[in-house]
Image (cartoon, rainbow over all chains, first blue to last red):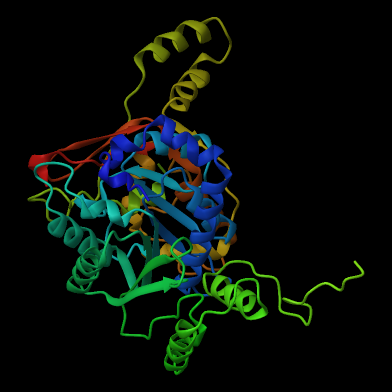
Length: 273
Length: 155
């Protein structure tokens, strides 16, 4: 997968052409919406009560629209003027600000009931200018974010870490700024559907929610490993019933849509057909 | 930019600025529109009323946002009221807003909530600038989007 943050700084990469994709490409829009829905779910906001939220890297306001649909009010920050222009054209309800998240969140203390960010945090791990220092910029971002959230508020940041070190860097800076929490991984068995959510909490250490597609985590691991070892000795023959079942199980773990199992699964058709 | 956002905004990200609150709103009047406006409305009736309103329209926009009393009463404790009042006054939309503090019974006072709703969410500054009270740094507002980007030497 190509990584846009290796190509150009965000304010240059997200030009008019790239911004247009976010209003025309239905696939991009669908994925953004799904991730926003999941981020709101992880925020654990009080039910039936409108909240005042911060959207970091709001871009063309796709995630903001999801917040609006859920009855919340929001303020979005982004570094790309082209993307913000699109947001203005889309007539989103939230207010927009042109800001670099690495320079800090310019808000007064305790302003927001929560914060979300969709696919923006990985940009902070790159030094695009000679005076950029990723560690300092991350720390500045997290410490100012901590300040502008009200107590017991959460921040959910979906991001694409390039490797384990980057994930470690981001989480350690967040912890240094005073947050509790960690990374929740959805669909860890799939390369494509796998999504990382950094769930940060300001008040007290609460156990992290579980990622999607990780049902068989406790106790099941040993069993699964034994099963896998057994299968490696002799893989089921291709197109056999066991092979089909294995494949379906694999795809189910990846979070894909799989037809349900029935007595007809993997059965040969009768000769009459 | 809505006044609710203005109420939350600071310029403390600049190096050397400790508080950076509240930011001053300046509205740049479009000179061309101004002259244009003078010329067109002069031949009509009611010049005195028509001209300042039209001028304002290029800088400040009143949009309609659905009224949500729950949200307004929830957000009022977070609002710095004198700052909101002076901001609304500086852009000429302080009608009926209490000067010092919201009334005690604001949660149930529907009329007050409606006034607060209008000031917080419906009045928008489209063109203008925000001025930092400590350093005097100006942040331009273009098309309703404040530009809070800082230069290398200000971080």
